[in-house]
Image 1 (spheres, rainbow, N blue to C red):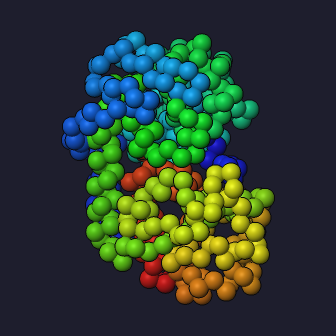
Image 2 (cartoon, rainbow, N blue to C red):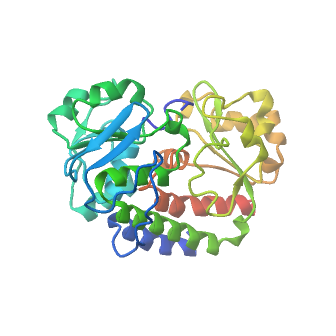
Image 3 (cartoon, one colour):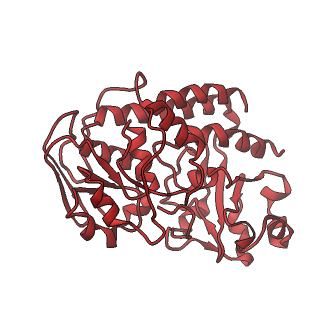
Length: 347
């Protein structure tokens, strides 16, 4: 998933969250028992070592005969799922385009003793030849928008684990994506441990910031062609709601496909807290200074009262906020909590 590439696309708590992040990374000593829930397709949940496993998806079924060892991924989010479960993929897309690995990912790679990841260039999309050459036992595609075109070419290589409905590319929570992948990998208990560690990290931050409770929020991204209402009704709220915030009533007017906010309708962004990010810099529709000079924007109560903040994109925080996953959540809480605290306080 090329995150944020298209519109359809420290306070006291921080020290606690750092410890929780370390716990999450290997998902050991932090978990709970396997829940035993059923998969979305109705098949029974697989405990560790419960094979074969058969999982329905929107294009067919993934038949996993034995516990996979070699895992390939087709998106950065799928790589994060594997790493969160303690697995280093045999091959992954180069999500950073040759740049440095994000802080949260490097922490986990170091703990797993992995050093670096084996990457393929995904500039022109999924590299089927590179994936086939890596000889994976299974291919994770829970976090991708390209499965419509990828599935037929990936299926002959190895079983493809992906979502059961095409709309799930935009609407599944990271917990649901993680659990489905874990079923195919025989790692249900580890997935529950990851979820529990994430939940504890967020709960600790929420307890440290009771002022977050009940506040509405809007998260917007300035893309080259539009301002995007990212916190639409069906968007995975990530850490926001667990921290005590909630989406505005206007969120119901937006979807993954209908998410543009015109300059004339910037009042749609009104909320108790407004977060905006500029991942394209000067190539965005507007720069931060240009938007802040806009008369409609300046008239917003949230802006006038200084409950507005810019989420940095240089350290990949903006992308991780927009597209939460199993690996980024505690890091997002660590980095986002002080930004939210200042915005709520009007600093």
